[in-house]
Length: 139
Image 1: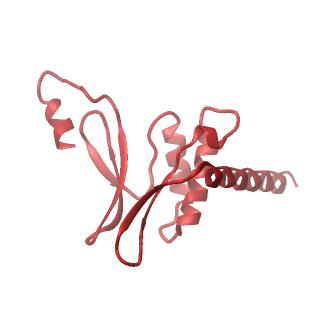
Image 2: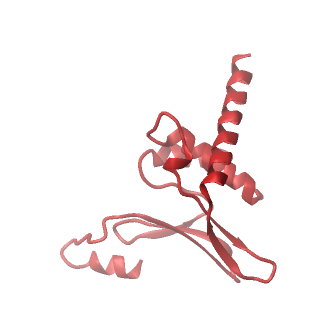
């Protein structure tokens, strides 16, 4: 972020032109999620979204995110938010790449990109939950 922000001090340059989300872990604060925008500004979040339809996604996250959620609940919420906010008629594993950040009992932090089969299972679960919610509302 310091590098990105430094470029903005000379003639209004915005050489990077992108926003980033990145996650990490440290012994003081635990798991953390940060966002950086093209101006070099950055901030920490519990849950956030960038890109198209990010306002709608952030609204859903504000309503449904819980601090005490486990990895599976957070994963399911992410899929739900994506399914309702992506510019697509249907969500599929071909359109997603999902990564998790976990800490093992020995303290090692692991970043893992989920295989397509796990993403497909999550999308299927999200679609089933959405159908169940829709049938409840129509009853």
